Every structure is written in structure tokens, then in C-alpha cells.
Image: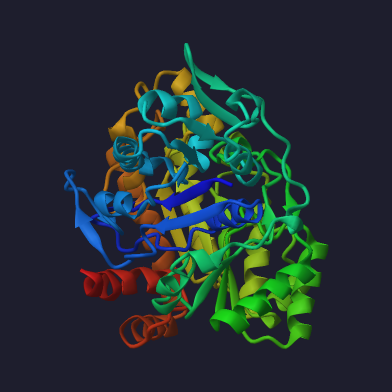
Length: 502
């Protein structure tokens, strides 16, 4: 039996950010349950969960650090730890995580330090080169890999889906097959995490609707968008759990934690119409009273009038659609296979069924022109009249592990991977920031203006066509601890939650 410590590091947040990504680390909770079931002793250090209201200044004035300090994390690691696993889901967290790894190595020179998550999957060799204190980068799903890494007798060369430090540099082993029997993976080990700190304060990935619990009903995504790192992390196989088991897990959490809302962390929850219909009907038949929401962008093909009605009846409160662009030529280039007219029809059906909808837009893709962005503006106005409540407009950022990242690196348009590159990824969603434009036709300054224009167009036409929403916005932000829309949640975080924490 090995003594294992799994760490969710503190997170980097832009000072200008109105909201913080404070949500329970479900991926690490799955790893913990699998390692524990395999007979190993597991200690969890959730730096965010243990101090979600703690914000510390760092050397870079553009950011603050949320959660435990580096020193506090290291102090919490048991002295007998043999394996230390660290999660790094987003590449912009890497500079912070690297500092943590170096500090851990100084105090635990003999421990095996393993990095997991999407960043590790996208840049495994880079992580080993950039951080000599790191022993192993894990790729893809982590349950089976972490269990094998806990076996000190097994050579690293015989463990699939990792990169490790060889005599002459990083060595990458063959990939392992995806876990198909995902229903057999033990449920997240929330008993090892400070889960009540998240639940008590309404933290979660979606809109705050009370005590929000994360849930996963599927893994992977069958689509191949060029801006998404899904292919690197998961491949193209979409695997769903049995809907009966998902509902059983929901019941368990309601009874154990008094959960009022479930945030689905799936990459793409609604892919199979039959699965969705069965799941909704099981919820309705169960008599359970809760809401659930899809914070990640979902597909519209499976959401017709019947499915939309069932979503509303089953308590689905919020859905995010992901059109990404209103330009057909851009959609073709980024391999986003959607029908915009069908998506608008799906949005109308969902809103009529009482489901609050949001749309995600990206602008500034490589090759995107002014004309194509104006086509997206036209689509944004049309979407506002469908009745959806929220829309976000973000500048495209080339994340490691994506086709477009590889393309820009080949073209030398991302010349160097350094801390400033990662910090720019962290700033890419901030309204006041100016991340670089990767379109040859649009300057960084103009792209920032276009982003403001896109957001302004949506909310102008949305509120002009439905003025009652202005009243609801004020009521839910200023006089309620729960919100219904993304905009309400952002404003509440900015003016109330963050101010209280500081």
C-alpha cells in the first residue's frame, strides 16, 4: 500500500475578473476514489476548497491567488507521503503549479511527483523540461494510470499514457485505451474533500441555485472542433453512463448533502436523444425535487420540442449552447458541424419550456475577416430575439492540445511558450484585458472593440424586447442569494461575493 497525496492547487484569477472558477474538483475526486479502492491511503489537499474566500496578492499585479498559500499546501502534505499527484486542468495555471512542484520537491526529495489534467495531457514533455522537479506527466484519463503509478515495483516504461524523465530527456509511453465501463468507476470520494465549503456558499460551475453539486453523466465528445483540446485529452469516443445510475447518484447526494442543484461537468451531455429522453423521464418519475444545468456548451441537434419539454419538466434550469460563430465560413474552417437555423429553433423550444439558455461565441479565429465577424453580429441579434437570456463573446485563444495551437506554432505565430503566454490565456476572458488577436485581418485593439459590440448588441436587443428582465436582474443580484442567469451570477460575484471575501 502506498501513501498518496492528491492536490488541487490554488488558482490564478485576474484582478479584473468579476467571478472566480470556484467549483469542486470532480476529476480529482474520481482519481481519489479509484486509488482508495485499489487499497492505497489517500490524503486530499484542496487548496481552493479549504479557503475559497481567501485571495492573496502575487508578484504580478494583474492577478490574485485564490485559496491556500503555497507554504500552507506544502505544510499539509503528510511526512510519509510517497506519491504526490497534482492536478493542472487549465494551461494558464501552469506557472503557479510549477512553483508548487518546486516547493514540494525541496521538502520531499524522495517522493514521486505526478502531474495530471488537460495541461499535462497537452504538453507532457514541455512540463518535464520546464520543471525538472517533476517526475511524471500523466495523459488522458487518470484512474488506471494513477493506480499503476502507485506500484513502486512497476517500471515507468511499462506504464502507458505517461511521459517521464529518461536518461537523455523526456520519454513518452504508448497511450492506453479509454475506459469504456465508466459505470464501474467508483463514485467521487467527496468524503475526503471539504465539500461543505463549496455547498454552503453556493459555489459551482453554473449559475448559483443553492447547494450545487457537480455530476458527470458521460465522458468524451465525438466532435473534432479545431479550437478544442478534447481530442488530446479524451479522443473521439463519447461514453455515457446508465441513466438509472446517474439518477441513483442524484438521490444519494440529495439525501446525504441536501443538494438543490446539480451542475453537469460533461464535455457534451446531450448527444444521444434516446439517452436524454430516458434520463428526463426517470427524473420525473422519481419525484425528486431539484434543478440541474449544463454549464458546458451542448449540442442542439437532440433538443427538439419533445426533448425541450422533458428538460423543463425534469428540472433542467440552465443550458449553454455553443454556436461559436454566426459565420458559415468560419464554422467550416473550425470544423464546427452545426445548423444555425436548427440551433435557433432549439433555443426557442428550450426557453418556451422554462429552460434558461446561454450562447457562447468566439471571435478572432485565424483567418477570420471583418465581414465574418459582422455575420456573427447579425446572428447575435437574431439569437437575442429567440428569447435566450445570456450570451458571452470571447476572443479566440490557442490552447495547447488543439489543432489551431499546433497550426500557429508551425507558422511561428506562437514563437515561444513561456509564462507570459500562459498569463495571456488567463486574461483572454477578461473584458478589460487585451489578449492578442490571431486573425491576420483584425488587430488586437479592434478585436477588443468587437467583443464589446457583440455583448452590447445581445443585451440591448434582449432587454428591449423583454424589459421585465431588467427588473428580474436587479432583484436577483441585489436582493437574493441565488441567481437565474449568467449575467446575474457575474454581477453578484463582482459586487457581493468577492467583496465579502476580501
